[in-house]
Every structure is written in C-alpha cells, then in structure tokens.
Amino acid sequence: MENDQRQQIGVASERAILVGIELPDSPFDSRQSLRELLALAESAGTDVVSSIFQRRYRIDPKYFIGRGKVEELAAKVEAEEAQVVIFDDDLSPAQLREVEDVCKCKVIDRSELILDIFANRARTHEARLQVELAQLEYTAPRLRGMWKHLERIAGAGGGTGAGVVGGVGTRGPGERQIEIDRRIVKRRITQLKREIAAIGRRKVRQVSAREDQFNVSLVGYTNAGKSTLMNCLTDAGVHVEDRLFATLDTKTRRWSLGGGNEALLSDTVGFVQRLPHHLVASFRATLEEAIHADLLLHVVDGSSPAAMEQYKAVCRVLEDLGCEGHRTLVLLNKIDLISERADLQVLQHQLPDALPVSARTGVGVTELVERVLDMVAGPTQRLTLRIRMSDGRAIAFLEHRAEVLERHYTNSSVDMDVKIGSVHLSRLLANHPETQVMTETSSGSA
Image (cartoon, rainbow, N blue to C red; front, side, top):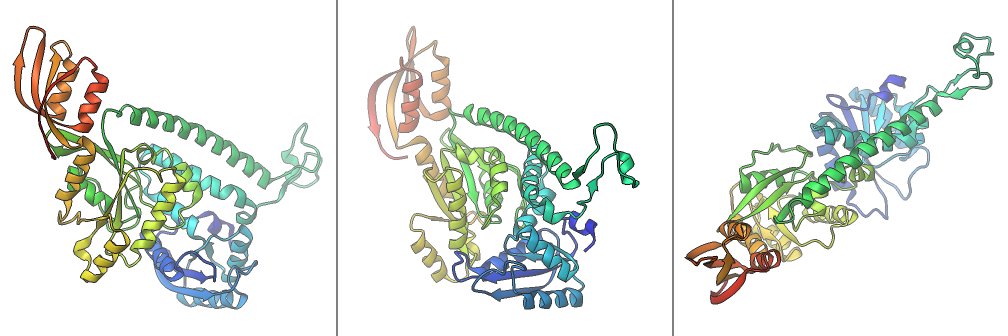
C-alpha cells in the first residue's frame, strides 16, 4: 500500500467494508457491536458497501482474523472497489500492516474511526486540543507499524547524496526517522497536556464558582436524546441531529424549575461501548461538569434494542471518571418510539427507578421537573424568618429561592413569612447565621 494512504486516516466519502469477530469470552454482543460500527462509519461519512463477520476461538496473531478470511476480504475489497476496511476491534500495528498488504487498501480499527469522528466534529479550541492529544497518544506507540519511511539519516562522512546533509558532530550511523518522529510527537503531547491542564484548572474554577447553584449534568449514550431533552427543558437551542456524536462541546444553561427555583443544566459528550481510553482521559476537562454535578440525569434510549447494553456502557465510563457514587436519576427517553408496551414494561422492570419521558413530545417532563425540584429545594415549609435589614444577601436569597407571602418591617429587621424548601433553608441558615426562625406556620410537600 502507498505511504500516503496510511497517512490519510480520514474516511469521509470513502467506500468501506466492515469486519467483526465473535470470541467465546467476549463481554459484548458482537452482532450489536457491528451494527453500532455501521452507525459510527455512516456518522463519519463513509459509504458502507459490505461487511464480514467471523466466529473464532482465538485471535489470529498475524491477521486478527484467519488467513482465509483475509483473502476473502481482499477479494471483496476488489469486487466492491472499497477504499477502506474498518475493524470493530483494536488491531496491533503489525496486524494493520499485514492486512493492508493483503487487501491493498487502508485499514483502520474502531478506536481510529471514533478519533476521526471526534476530529471532524470538534469546533471549540478546547475540543480540538483534546482530540489532537487523544490522536497522538493513540498514534505514538504505533509509529513503527504505521509509517514506512524508516531510512537512516546518514552522517556527514557518507559518500551518498544523503550523506551530505550532515555537518559537524553528525558523523556516525545517524538516527532513524522514526526516532525523530517519536521526539516530535512526545514534545507535542507534553505541550498539549500542559494546555489542557490549564483548561482543566480553569474549568474547575468555573464549576467551583457555582457552588451556590444546583448543578445537573445530562449523561448518556451517544444519540440517546440528551440535546433534545436540554432544548425541551431550557430552550437552549443546542444542535440536534440523528447521528452519533452530533455534539461534542459541553453547554450549560439555566433551568427554571418554578417557584423561584432553578438549576444549571449541562449537556455533555455522549459515550459508546469501548470508548477509547485516551479519548476519555483527554476529554476529562470537558466532563468536569459531570464529575462535579449535584445530580446526573442518565438518559437512556428506550427505543433501542440494545438499551441495557448502552446503559451499562455509560455506567462503566462514569465509573472510570469517579462518578459512580453520584446521585443519579435514570430517564427512559424516546418512549413515543417504543411500539410494544411490553418492551417498555421489560425496561421498567430492569430499571425500576427510571422515569419514562419523551424529550420530543414532552411526555414525563412535568414529573421530571417535580423530582428535580424536590432534590433542589427539599420539602416545603412555611416559616417566619427575621432578617437584619442590612443583610441584603439573605433578603435577595429569599426573593429568588422562596415564595415570600408577607413582610413586616421594624427599625432594624424584617420579618418575612415564606414558603421555602428545607435544602434552601439549611443553606440560608449556614451562610447567614444571624437569621432567626421565629415561627413555623405550617409544613408540607411542594
């Protein structure tokens, strides 16, 4: 295969053939994984013309799939005039090279495809830095297998044309181009990590500055409907498209819950099965919203036949991020697309605490707001609070976080008859210790 083919990792508009493999000890549904690879490939802009699937007891160390299957694949590449072969698993550099030599076309694996999608979708400076870091960390250990320009740069003493490029101090065997490439990649990775670390520190400061706000993050499998739900709840105008990884950048908007209560709602990047480790690590700054959220809304595509597998895949990524202990509300989205009621009942049995919703039609949104409001404000109490007139912050807090029923002014204070949630009351008393609870008129639920 020509060198420039290997260097052009992008797959948009190319004719592609997919390759899947089923192993006895695989924790994934291999057929479903191949269907997801098809969606990923189409999302990347390829024209998928065929696919190959093989059951094996173990991976072939040379070709990943068997020699006979590789020859079948090569024949299919020629017949379909395919420009790229996409494997549903990660291959070693040597395996990529061997399959390319047989098929005479570009070969990439699942991680490389996902990285290509992220590279094409990144819009902000932050996202581009994170994708570049993930690509370099994926590529660095594979340089020897991916590039073929391994000729030596000869020392000045050489008699060939290459030898004359040297100078004082360059005599000797010289150094391989691969070593120069590795140094360049290493320097760039160090620089990117430094820039992303600075972004991460700024993101932590931004999130920390919202400590007086209730922070909610939408998490879930890609294309589960997170952006549609965010638009439904906040009128955020987030881009919505029926394809995987349609949006990569985190967006945060104010979410009015009624009665003077509000939360900050953040939309995060979606997940897939076997999301490349380097991508999760580099996007950690973007996922800072989820890491520090007071509540996670885990959106599950209830209309997908692989809903439970997608739910478990997201849980694994959240565990990697250290979010497994966070308070979480599971939402079964797209219930308007579930044709059989029995299918919904099965999902509700598997996820008994999940709330059925439809971000497109608005079904279940009212109950969602009520549940979140109960977490934000707590059970409502009616109280009379005495606040010093000079404590403008406490008065402003009540104006925004409680329902003020009556006011009675004295020379130095104001008695405010309010309906307030227990969570807000606790925060008020902690931050304004001079506030006095005079009478508890009545209590009840919001």
